[in-house]
Image (cartoon, rainbow, N blue to C red; front, side, top):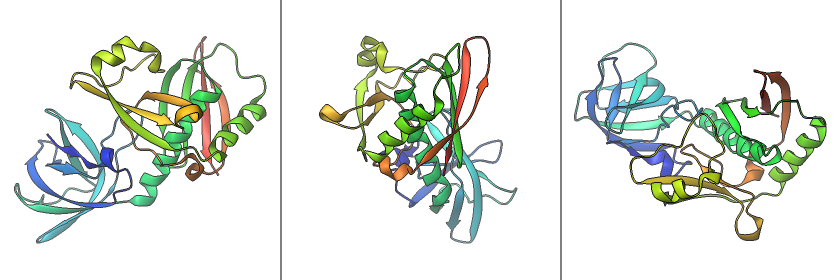
Length: 238
C-alpha cells in the first residue's frame, strides 16, 4: 500500500518516500506519494525525484495492484534501488492548474445540474460530458453564473462516509458511467461551501483548491455533440 499524501494535503509539494518495488514496466513503487496517480479524469503528476547517487524526472504516476502507486520515469534510466529513500518534488504549477480545473468542473456540474457521462482534466482546460439532448440556450448566462460561484470564494473541504452510506444516498453520485471507488470501506466526499452556503457535495478522489476564488476566471469553450443524448462542455482557464 502507498500512502496517498496528496489526499491529505493537496498543497504538499515535496516529501520523502521509500522505494518498495519496481514494476515490470519500469515504475517505482513507493510507500508514500506526493504525486497524484492518474484516475477520475485527472492526469498523474509530474516532477522530480532525488536519492543518494541519482536523480530522475518523473512523467506521471499510476495506480498498481494492491493499492500501490508507481512513479513513471520520463526516460529510461537506472532506477533507485529497492529500500532507497527518495525526495519527491512536484511540478507544482502543473498540479495547481489541475486543481483549479478540477474544482471548476465541480462547479460546472452545479450550473448545469444534469447527469455527467464523462470528464477530463488538463492543465489549461477541462470538460464534462452531460446527458443533455440539446445544447444550452444561453451559454453566456451559464458562464456568468459559473464565474459568480467562483467569485463567492467558497471553502472547499472533504469528508469521508462509508460505502453503505453512499449506497444509501445514490443522489450524491453525479456520474452515470463511473462509480466512485468502493471496496475499502469508505468513500471521500468533496464539499464546496458549508452550512447554508453549501452548493455541492459529491464523491471524488482528486485534488482541489482550498477556496473557489483560487480558480480564477474561466471561459466556456465549444459545445460538442457526442451522441444523441450527450453534449461535451469545455472550460478554459483565463
